Length: 235
Image (cartoon, rainbow, N blue to C red; front, top):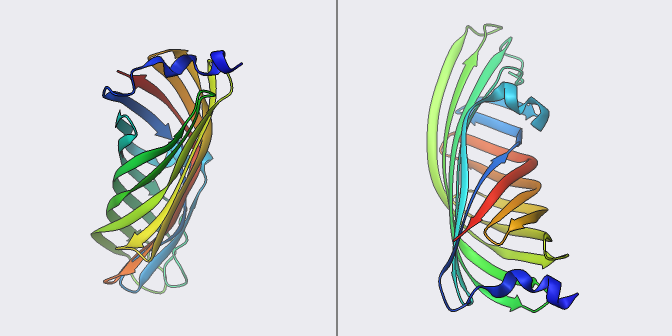
C-alpha cells in the first residue's frame, strides 16, 4: 500500500541525511593490460576472485539535503592473475594489478514520490590510479619483469533510481558513462535491498565497470563485473 511504501520516508528532507555503505564486490577482471609493446590478456571470473585477491577496500558515502546529493565511492583492489595469457614470446605471465578508483559525484533528485520511488541525475569525476606488475616467464625471449603505473580522470554522468516494493524491500539501480582521461568508461549496477530497521539496510546486486585506457605506452582496457553485497548505515 501507499502508506507502507512511504514509511521509510519519514526523515525531514530539509535536514542533512547521511549514509555510509561498506561493500564487497566479487568482481572478475576481463580484458587487456600492457606496458610498451608487452601486453597480456586477463580473464579472471568472479569465482576466481578469492584466489586472485590480495587486498580490497570498498565503501560509498552519500550526503543529501532536500533535492541535492553528494556521492563518494572509493575502491582499492589488488589482484594477481597467474593464468593470464602471455602471448607468443613468453611461456607464462604473472599479472598483478593494483587499482584505486575515487568517484565523486553531485546530483539532483528529479523524483521523490509517496510510493517510495526516487530518481536522481548525477555527474562528476572518476579518478583512476592503476599500477601493473608483469612477470613474464622465459620463452622465445628471456624472462623479464615490467612495472608501470598511470593516473587519469574521467568525467562521468548518469542516473540512479530506487523503488520501494514494501516497507522492507526495495529495488535500486545506477548507470553512468563518460571519458576524458580514458577513451571511454561506463558503469551499470542493478540490485535491491532489505531494510532491517530505519537506520540499517542490507544491499545486494550485480555491478559492471568498464574502462578503455590506452595512452603513453600504457594499456588498461578492462571490464570488471560480478556480484556486489554490502550494508547501508543511515544517520
